[in-house]
Image (cartoon, rainbow, N blue to C red; front, side):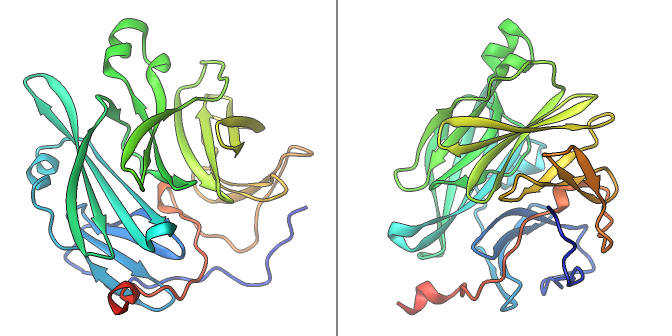
Length: 285
């Protein structure tokens, strides 16, 4: 059963804070490192434990597309066989009423960007990619299937293998299609899928790759139950619209931690474990 931690929440001061910037966004996390941005223009890698901050070289090629309001998303992961961290940027590029997506990959080892194959013809759902099993994953919608069959049936998960840089599809859980929204997450090295309705949030975990297990249906009101973290005992840390609560899947009870962090958006949360990984260690090889 969940026990109240002995320590209180700790604020991590971002060393790149700029009073002229509208806001910083977390675009992904991996091995105690954060990929962040200032208004989705300047990108950084940040290690809060060592206070290191690394600014990415400018990409430039997709900046005008983002300024024109096109959808875009990021992902951040690690390639063990190459000892390299990679950041992926996908930007929607509308051309003659057709959709395509430009895909760029940043390598920490080379400190440079490169363009790779176009992402399949899908609509991004403005969610950061989740890194699991060497692949980044996004929930996307197929515009062709949308025109034929309606909204819910168009969603699926696309993945990008960071080693061979190829896209593939991941099967969805066996959903009841009465949901209003969905997103993916990662917890404990497993891919997660959350589907939201007016009365509940269903939580699925891929404990074995390509095999989903439903671990909870969290009661909610107007789908204000956004999972943040799933423990090894399937206890779920949930954002309820204003604060955090633990949901016990065994007896369907809620416990509100004494030490609270109040935040109106669940998108501002990310799981963090302290790390001494240096942002410059690859350059020292």
